[in-house]
Amino acid sequence: MKTQLEQDIKALANNEQREVLMRFFKTGKGQYGEGDRFLGVKVPQVRALVRRHAESCSFAEIERLVASPYHEIRLAALLALVRRFKLAKKRPEEQRKCVDIYLANTEFINNWDLVDLSCYELLGNWLLGRDCTLLYEMASPACSLWENRIAIVTTIQFIRHGDFCHTLAIADRLMTHPHDLIHKAVGWMLREVGKRDRKILEAYLKPRLATMPRTMLRYAIERFPEPLRKSYLTGRDIER
Image 1 (cartoon, one colour):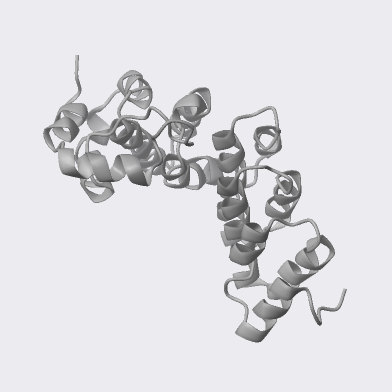
Image 2: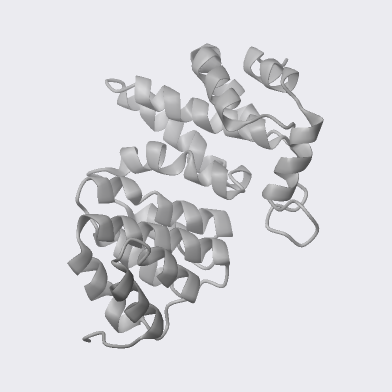
């Protein structure tokens, strides 16, 4: 039986927007989102429906929606988990349930927006002050591209709390990753570190300049003063 959340999302389907989203999220043959299906519903619309319906969905219903063939419904299910997690501040058993559902269904968290809009709000908050071994496991080459991205993007929550060690360690694990989406994600997290402490970021970057993917470096130094940014890009006049 369809939930009201699912019905309301499908009611907003828009064919013109669907074509735009399918191109934007690279659903063509051989692309990273190959085969994904879209309804043509925008993120603000999905968020509004999640705010309205998340609490009326059972966890079993949310888990079913996470596995939907439609991208926007999977997104809604993930945002519902995030919302339920936040509302359960004094109910750790319910928060743990949200996390367990999330981790059991990473095969369906299969595009960068699904990762970025859910992982640090849910998994990042849960792991604050806890053992983070699972993030290092998810950064393994044996795991999927999207689990690798979850591993690094989740660490933004630690960065916001002044803890950079997991970000830098996981960045090292992903340094030789072949995919541009990981280069961008790692560079983004390094930039977040640099926004808070540029000295730490520079100390991390300098010995790795020769091996760091160009895209990763560009993202990492995006907020540097222009002369310094150019020095890093050319490899000139940088003390090692």
